[in-house]
Length: 110
Image (cartoon, rainbow, N blue to C red; front, side):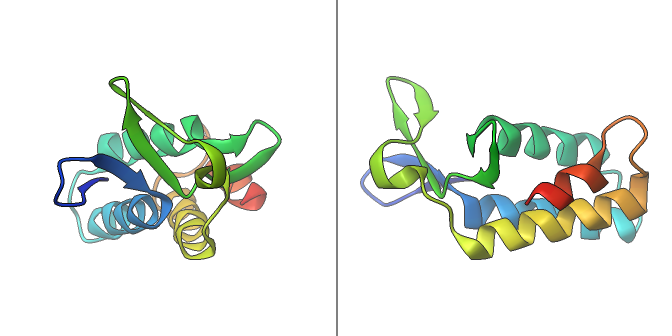
C-alpha cells in the first residue's frame, strides 16, 4: 500500500502491506471477491523480501528512479508487518487453499 509523507515522496512499508493483505483476506471471508487483489499484494510482498533466503519483507521501499526500492536500513524487517503478512497467509490458505499458490508454506517462512 503506497503512502505519501506530505512532501510528495512515495513509499511503501511492510506494516501497510501487512494491514492491506490482512484486510483483503478478511473481506474475502465476508464474501467480497478479493482473491486477485490479494494475489497482487502477495506478489508485491514476495518481490520485496529481504532476500531469497530471508522471507521477511523489507520494512520500507521508497520511490527511486521510478521504482520502489529499499536501501540501507530500509532492508531490515518490521515485526508487526511480518506478523500481519504471516497471519494473512494462514487465513488465505484457509480461504482459498494452497494448491495453486502455496500460502501455507509461505506463512511458515515468515
